[in-house]
Length: 102
Image 1 (cartoon, one colour):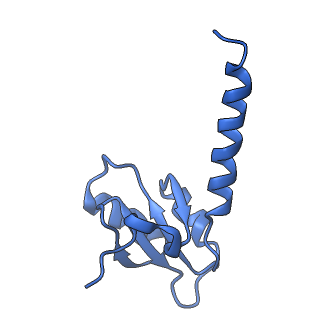
Image 2 (tube, one colour; image 1 turned 180 degrees about the horizontal axis):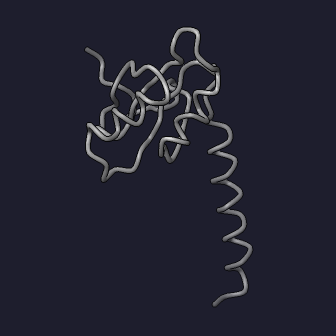
C-alpha cells in the first residue's frame, strides 16, 4: 500500500462523520429515517410507526418521514435508530430521498 493511504482514509472518515453529524434533524419532533434497503415496505413502516407517527414515505420505500406523536417524547431520532434506521436526517436535507410531491 502507498504511504498516503492511511491519511486519505482518515480524511475520508472525518468527512463522512462531519456530514452525518451536520445533517441531523433541526427540529427534535420531525425527521427523515433511512432504513436498510432490503427491508420490505411493511417492515419499514412498522419500525417507523413504533418510533413515531409516519407522515410520509420517501422516493424509495426504505425512507420514511416521521413526527413525534402528540404528547410523546422528543427523542424521535433515537427511537428511529433503535428501530433499525441507519441514518436519521433533517427532512429538508433529504433531497431526492424526500417524499414525492403530490
